[in-house]
Image 1 (cartoon, one colour):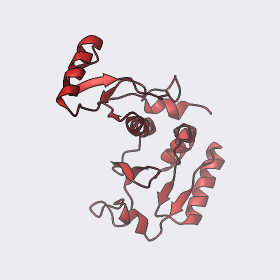
Image 2 (spheres, rainbow, N blue to C red):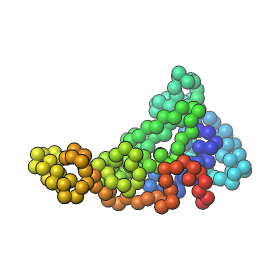
Image 3 (cartoon, helix red, strand yellow):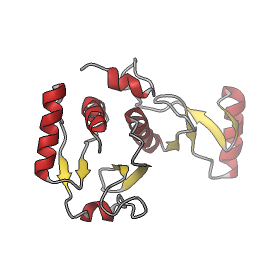
Image 4 (tube, helix red, strand yellow):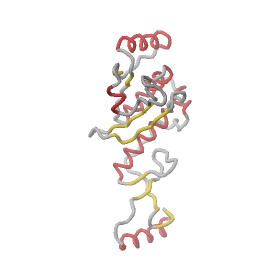
Length: 190
């Protein structure tokens, strides 16, 4: 992970904590290298890295998670992001090439989408933004299909029995002033 990403994740850590998520870094560098890196970031920016960074010197963890692409390098990790739920299940994998930095607001949006979809037993549509309507699970019986079409006609909340929407329960915007703009979190002063 590059320095800009360490700084960005550090600044965004409170947002992850509000979503009950814990950040964890993984690098094939040594622990002493991580300490020097974290100290350099602190000395030059005043930012403390608030999450652990695992030293995976032999690449064992990185290889198990598919983070080393032999086509790119046999020792350098690609920029992967994993969202792992509280049961230890990998729910989302984002893979960034070495020359493209991660976009923290998109990671936060995806995390919140997973949480809201799970809690509301539905799906989030393309370009979903936290707390906007989500897609209702499709009906399972013909009677439910008829009821769904009637509901759509009355409430104007969809286009057909297989695509209707509802407002999610227990959805909170992390910060009213935030959007899916990568610069917004970078410029946010804690």
